[in-house]
Each structure stands twice: as C-alpha cells, then as structure tokens.
Image (tube, rainbow, N blue to C red):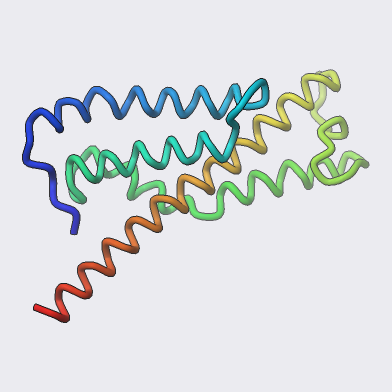
Length: 150
C-alpha cells in the first residue's frame, strides 16, 4: 500500500502542481496534431499526474480516487480508436481515413480534424490506464511479498 507523504511542503506543492500538469497534458493531447505531442504523450502526462497524486496523498486519499476510477475505463480508448476507424469504413473509405468519416454538416477538413482528435483521445485514455494499472499492480505485488516475508 502506498502511504501518504508526511511533508506538508510536498503535499502543498502537489495540490498546486497536479492540476497544472493535468492542464498541460490536455494541451498536449488536443494540440498534438499541430506540433510535437498527441495521444501517447498526453496520456503519459495525464497518467503521471494521477500517479503523482497517489504517491503524494496515499492510496486511499480522496485525491487518489480518480486514478482508481480510471482503471475501470480499461479498453475504452481502444473502443474509441476502433470506433472512429469503423465509422470511416462505414463511410466507404479505408480504416482511419478521416475524409470518409460520415458526420452530417461538417466539411472534409473539419471531419479530418475531429477524427484525429478522437483517435488521439482514444490513445491517451489507453496509455493513461495502462500506466496507472502498471503502478498499481507493482504496489500490489509489493504488498503480497511483504505479507509472505513478514
């Protein structure tokens, strides 16, 4: 079990920095198609910010509950990614050819932009869930080893 950090300075900095890191992760996610970044990097940043909350405030703190709830979304990112690709196929094109994403009232450039953002969101969700599940499974392994040794 991950215990809360006992320093008031670390906890105060965490209360300030975690939302800033999450906003930066969303920025990287949504503006990644215009420069470096995108779904993978945005997902890593968002997952890391949630893990930072767990490391600073402990496993059972209210600020750490988001990380636990995110674990229930395993596979949602893959469904978003595959869903966008499937809609492109239904529109008569190739998988993830966003020009064939059939959304009424949008021009081809808007459909491409929306398709890219939705795909990047799917990637970010899966990367964040994977990062959090790896850390939680490692901490659970530590608990199991401690109970066997002690």
